[in-house]
Image (cartoon, rainbow, N blue to C red; front, side):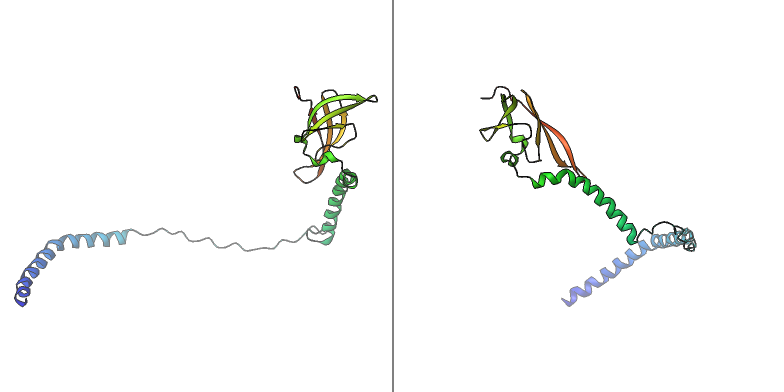
Length: 183
């Protein structure tokens, strides 16, 4: 094994000399180009502007209410309570009265199937869960405090009280139309 290593050493040395001889001029040229590029390529950095000096402003609203004072909060609460009082006047009677049986059913599950006249007053026949009920003006229907305002041969008109997107109670009209061809 020692003889093989000594025999390979001259071949390795000759190969390295040839390899280094071939790459030497190209590498010098490459090094020269890199040096030129480093010297010519200068980054252009603009200087940062000087920071502006902070000058505090004087509060010149002395006659008005300060935005974070208790007085401002009291005014806002009074304004909100006036609005809620108006809303409460609309919903308060509905919350204190006794509920009628048909108020437990959503209005879309109620169907008008007929009408008749009893003692000179119009009466609507409505179906809920395959049971027929008689309703008159003044009765309540549906889950939105729907009070019947008119009964005709073809429809039942209601006034519902619902909350709008802002959370305020408003009145809205609703109607039930007579279903044709019901058995």
